[in-house]
Image (tube, rainbow, N blue to C red):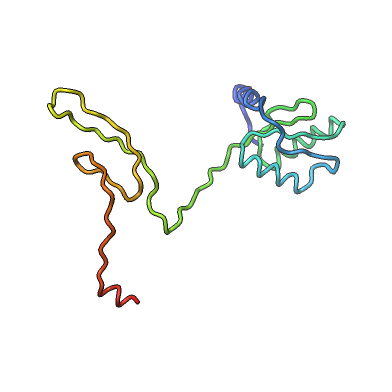
Length: 156
């Protein structure tokens, strides 16, 4: 089970105040599918609220402890029928497709003034994958690479 300091717990309680419950636990209790849904919600959001429909306080406390132990989550708050859980988000590594080139990127262009006595002009520009900045600060598109007609004929 994940441990939180009192300051972290207080900050998470404040952050969870405006959240709505994302998982509801019904009369069938803590089933495998409910645990799976709580795990996926924790992965997606990090901080979630769970509503338990049941009047037995001891059963809710047992569910709360079981969820935290099984899913390696930290108990943040238990008020009435609401349980607040926290687990740091898992960083998903996005793989790029082999076909696409570079995406958009931001570049800062600094041009000296013509007279040399004034401040240089600074502009931020978004470049597409096939564009580059020249030494003079101009943006140029890459030309399509020339292909050999002999090599093309051999590859076909």
